[in-house]
Length: 154
View 1 (cartoon, helix red, strand yellow):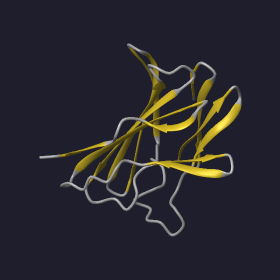
View 2: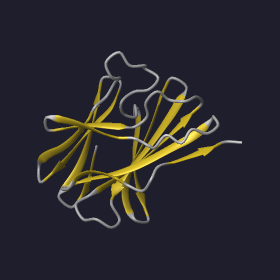
View 3: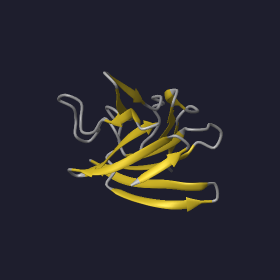
């Protein structure tokens, strides 16, 4: 599956047990999702959201991709759409429903010879909670969006 924003595209491919994605600009790779756990890490907290179901939809603002998945007792959701204000840029919005304090939560990418991660700030509150983070990927690279939020549940 593929979604474009000008010269930037995200391509999702099913590999193993989940969807992995690569973001390109003008046909050159900008970032590739890193999947699984960190060395010796806890499988309940993968280095990127484990996305297993994927749908393409049309919103009022245009096309988008929606994906969901789970790890341990946590449920992940993700949306990807063209950035509403920046040309050639994709906006990623992620949420994770957690029932306990995560040891790691975020999105990790291989960008050339380095690895970059975007993580929500740790605002320890009650659990269960929904943790959200957003970022964009385009010709300028990976950029965190507005501060992530955590909303506790009653």
